[in-house]
Image (cartoon, rainbow, N blue to C red; front, side, top):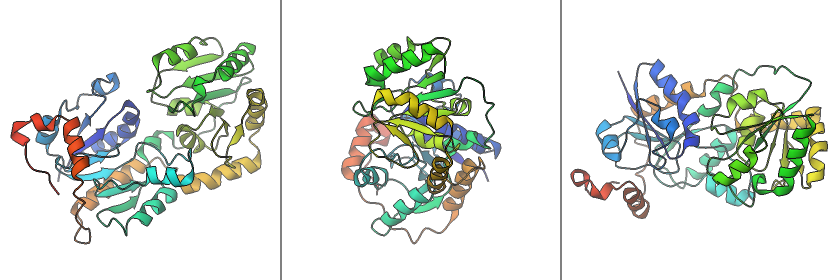
Length: 357
């Protein structure tokens, strides 16, 4: 039997989440289409041949399974709705607020394909209060290309990947002292720096950091971070969720002004402490690596690169299983209205119908 999949995203940074899923779907001989509800003009998405351009095409496609790297998804699209997540639980804010954001049940999804015990347990705690969804722990598709892990060829000049978050008060990209410190270190030539920035950061800020491009500094305007992860010995970051992805390699991360002193990170609060933290990280202390291993075994204990395979199997199994144990989803009238308004649904005369349950 053939199945029709829809990969539903909002922003360009979700494309690397969908790519391994697309490969797995096509490998099995099934059909797959993409749709972005916000970032429709992204060139990375437009390079694909199987993109649906508007909500009318999405409705007419009649998918069996919708894989959503978003917080919500239109209820009026056919098929089961599967949450595949646009990031890890980032541990960047106080635990109560962070948990609420990551585990908020918005009432749109039938199935959550969770990344590891930390996310699985969080959703299981929500399930008795919201008994309209199932949970299957699969691992996260985005990190499939990271595995199997291979030993990096060490050079005399260590490579440090700089990654930043979007939130202004948390992002190191806005910090002039850090900019000047990295500028000085790159000119000294003791380190080779690679840098990526969150795609939603201002263009003028990207241009500022791009001005450091030279023999020991390279700025990358990309959302495909895994090749950069593999090239790097350590990471320098703020609170970006890329930290969790990088740690899966069991490589150290130095953070600047992280909101928590996690024992699996080397955190500094002063720019004059950055280089000494780099030197410490590059020695990969045993105690630090042990803490990293404990953390990632709870975050994402899958190192086989087959999470996409597990996701597709789980969604097909769920499509066919008896779902009588699940309750009806909440009405969600306000959220449904906002989605319809965002997608210009009300202008589609042939689909202008009442809210569905």
